[in-house]
Length: 234
Ligand SMILES: NC(=O)c1ccc[n+]([C@@H]2O[C@H](COP(=O)([O-])OP(=O)(O)OC[C@H]3O[C@@H](n4cnc5c(N)ncnc54)[C@H](OP(=O)(O)O)[C@@H]3O)[C@@H](O)[C@H]2O)c1
Image (tube, rainbow, N blue to C red; front, side, top):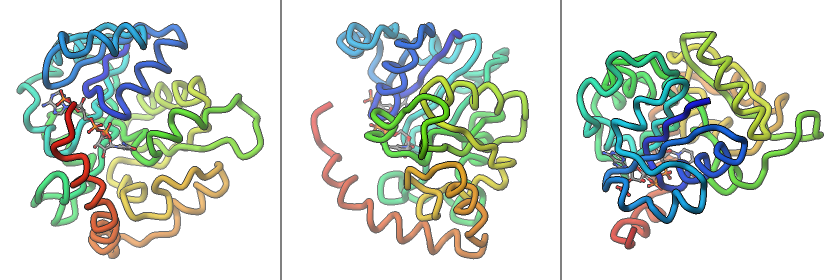
């Protein structure tokens, strides 16, 4: 497939490396331009690109940047695109500042879809980078890690579920984007490396009334991590 990745940090670089190794054509972009991605491109086999070039990939575009950076993407970035757009993002106020619409209850990825003016599929959002990099296993392996995929377009979700399988993970259709709060930070389905049965149970556990409380707890836990990363050379 022709795949674009916007964001070349922890998640973007792992996906670039793994997807290129699977034989996909991968373009990767960051905020600083293709010149800053020469080494990553050489190492992963992906092509260093501008954000616009990555967004013009034919089949899938993965947006994997901090939530606060989504409004900084060029307006109309996906105009004319028929690619499946995947959002890996999570809202952490400690990193992203306050986003009122989400604070009022809009699921993180519904907000991203609104800002992009484009439906998205939420995936790769509830696995830590280290696990994404190392825990892929062949289909049928006992205890294979399962990842949830939420979105409103069944065909788009099928494309992402196929990619997950290629990458070594089971996949679970977790319903609509409106339901995607079930895999947000602080939920039982967030970054626990669960297998299919356990993930299914975890997704059905939380109640919508606890979204803000769970986010706050996850945010407090992550605050020192984000503070330590802030100011580190890129
Ligand atoms: N890390 C994890 O374990 C993990 C797990 C699941 C989900 N997530 C979520 O996935 C998203 C990405 O996380 P990450 O940890 O991979 O982030 P990261 O390591 O901080 O990398 C962020 C990337 O986004 C790029 N970026 C920032 N603003 C941009 C813009 N305006 N245009 C283009 N690119 C831009 C940065 O490019 P520059 O360096 O050039 O600015 C960088 O390559 C976040 O929402 C995060 O919460 C992360």
